[in-house]
Length: 367
Ligand code: 8OZ
Image 1 (tube, rainbow, N blue to C red):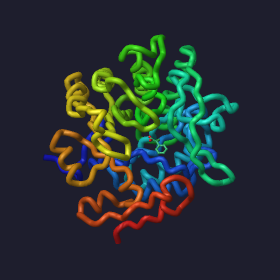
Image 2: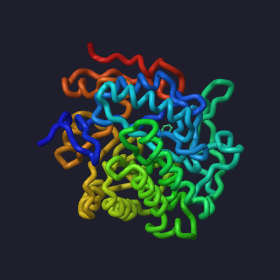
Image 3: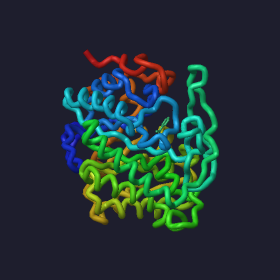
Image 4: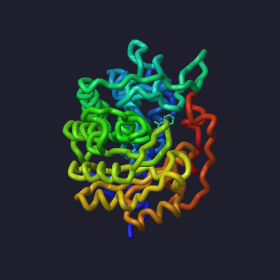
């Protein structure tokens, strides 16, 4: 049986081990441009089998929080190139998470201070972060407007352009579509946020259409073997809700199966919270079986609350990659610590979002 520390192939990505750094929003990119400390931060963590960057906006319209990075301007791409160079120098592999927040945004963050866009004009019961007088401050998300069907090809195109620039200009090894956590692609999937009556709403096929179009466009741009996708069937994050998630997500992974993706990344339960939600049961083994039965060959990546014993259990059940989030914030050498059974540094929640080097690049590695 393979161990957490054995190499694995995920599409075109030859990974040194099965431990993945999950995408983690850190709000340290003023003007949406990563700084020098971001290159240091990721390079310190390069012993992960794969690094997935924090969610990164594919367009100005895709922005939803203060000081999160983007991937749609020259300065942003140049800054990311510094990051990927630093990671590669340490022998690491890094993909960027492609993000469109949809309705989880605020007019202050949008082009011309317009309304955020969404499948339907339904405000998410959630908060975002703006900088007020220099201080990160939680504010309610703005009322969105429903996207016109004629605008959708432009969003699909923006995913593809961001993916191509990520690989060709910024030097990423691949990309991950953010299809999770109540952001645009997830908003289209789920009945709580999608009340459309056109080809993008109603049936499962219609609600899944945007996610599948965006994924196919990204695959056309950079190749399936460099493309992953993150899904969160039942998370309540950002007011996400679907009336019947099992058939929806079984359909989604069956449609993804023929695309030759590097991996499918599944958040089990509530993002960053409980792995089981009483009123939102979900069978993840059935989801994986649906993907495999449809011919899906990508690596199966699982996430949420894993420790070493639970990760080893997952490998036994046929999962291929385990994504760790918060433990990677406070343990740059998490792979070594897990291998040696060394104690883990505790994380400090107060420095998760915003600020500078403190709580970012100053967590100690083992001597
Ligand atoms: C925490 C804070 C802001 C954004 C996600 C991109 O949940 C996020 C996020 C997490 O996927």
